[in-house]
Image (cartoon, rainbow over all chains, first blue to last red):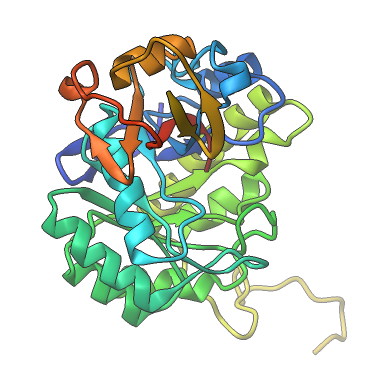
Length: 266
Length: 66
């Protein structure tokens, strides 16, 4: 159990005790994913929307492998326009998942970098349609603030490009966003490659992290999921404990006075 | 009836509604979304929405994603 009492994270009307959100893509099998989700302790998992494969239409639903207590967060991955994102959100809601949506409006297929302008526009439209919108965004502090003001239920800056495993390239961006987005959670989404990356994000004050590839492509996804769980707790506890300030030069840990000196020394 | 289903041309006999079409392909009605000619069909209307010759149908489900 954590030493310092922590509060749950609130995303719109939804409450989560785990600060680790997990994606369901890229697992070698549904059972590997099932084991990893259980080991992670997550209460929120992302899914994508795609056409049914008509030649394999009897394959079991992915949702059969997600614990029933876990909330489903459909994404708009693959959308490059506001209209496509709105359609994906409407389809997810029609499929019976509810009003929670992870908005992604991508501008660049190589970097999967969010389009800042279209992302803001789509956020405004989805909020007006009654969705609870968790917004994947660039690590830009001003845009993050605009998204919060537009009614986003969570602001989710990337640490580095999706699936790249490069970690949190600019940790200062997380500090900057946390200083400005004060009413809704900040979730570091994308780029986390190892457990240390998750801890670093949480220690910087992120309210949660969203991890997919780092777990799915680990040699042992369930073990990595559990490592991520503890890394998130460690980072969060480190944040709550209050990190010491950084200094440019050394400051001795041992007393300066009463030092032992050889005879004839200074 | 000639239809386009998930981008593929199909000739399917003995289907009259969107619900029939899901059954034809063995798709569970749970947690899928259907569009006919770009219009999303509400879940409660899947069973009584009639198909017309030449319609374009999209059947969407949840898959793994981040």
